[in-house]
Amino acid sequence: MILLLVLSLSIDSILIQPELQRAQTGIIVVDLKKDSVVYAYNHQKNLVPASNVKIITGAAALTFLGPDYRLKTKMILDGMMKRNTLQGDIIMIGGGDPGFSLGDLDFFVAAVKDRGISKVTGDIVLVDDYFTGERLPVGWAWHYLDARYAAEISALSLNRNVVNVHIEATKLGELADVVIEPATRYVKLVNEMRTKSGMDSIVIFRRPEVNTINVDGGIGLGHVRDIEVAVKDPTVFFGEYLKERLNAAGVRVSGSCVRRKGASAYRTVAQNLMIDSVMSAPMYDMIRELSTESVNLYGEAILKTLGAHYLQEGSFRAGVAVIKEFMTRCGADTAYVALYDGSGLSRHNLLSAYDLMLVLRYMYNSNLFDDFYWLLPGPGEGTLEFKLNGLRGLIRGKTGTLDAVSCLSGYLKLNDKDYCFSMLFNNFTCSNRKIEKIQEEILNELRRLLEKET
Image (tube, rainbow, N blue to C red):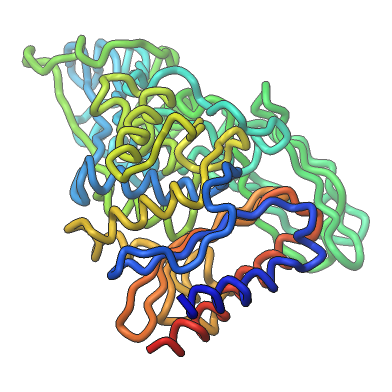
């Protein structure tokens, strides 16, 4: 009791800083071996959790799908071969793989080439209905929809649904050299950027309704920059770039890229159907990208995969239903939880530090804990690369950051004792960096007092 009182007084004194007087804060710390609360402050207050949602998404996927679960992207050649001509279509069936790469696409190009095909009379048919047609969750702000971290979601993804804008300075006053990588006609470029002296003043944007990237402002003399921009409609991007790569490899496709529904309509029952496929990385590796690097596309793809796998509906709504079922297993009352995505980018998400603690505690007591623990980054890794260095080897956790939102939840190991914690800070007007320093101050105070107990 004395320790709890000292902890409360000590941490409460940190929370009276001026920057927090009009902010909202929820904190809970639990001794996992004793299953007892060490410290709590507004721990059941609903707040915006930002990327701390990824803790729940990753835990649900690891529990329900398993570490070895994989997603499959299929290619079917549907038609008759006549000499070097495929009289029919190339059909691409998406399985939701968020990590499908340019190299994976070239594998399919090589598979067509290896069949001796130099001409396709039909279309490239894109079947992406493993996920429903909604490409963005509710609550994502319109002004960042061209950013790499807000890429649209599709069952046929390519290159994380972004292109890279490569910018190189030229001579003073002249237009900069700007190219799109990979080179594709699907994305247009308007370059009005000039080389200048001094610091960069880059302006780059894509309006939500078009695939035209505008580059303006200036780049400093001698500078080189790479900026990723999300594309509109990743499914069509997949198809158009596949067509371009086929043409570059000497395979001329006469038709267009068309979207169709119904992967089940393309069965391998006729001799003239050839299937090839690319498997995703294991779910464990996808969750690592989600947790360590905080890739939002992976969160939404995993969310929709959960819905498709368990409810036969690859929608945000169905995925959220599965995640809420998982939270219920953890002991949360989901009647008081609002979730709209799997990454935490939606500002409509609401849950408490207590809800996150329940998930962390559940995973601690599961046979998947060793896997789950090492999926979360520690200091020097991923989103904690430059943070919490004084706690290296003692902490693994997930950050969550939006404008006026800073959250940190995870595990703390002190003298062979295990703790989990969740700290959610909302509606502050100071910098996020200031809140991060307060979070680190709280963790260091916890360490000082809890180590003293032993």
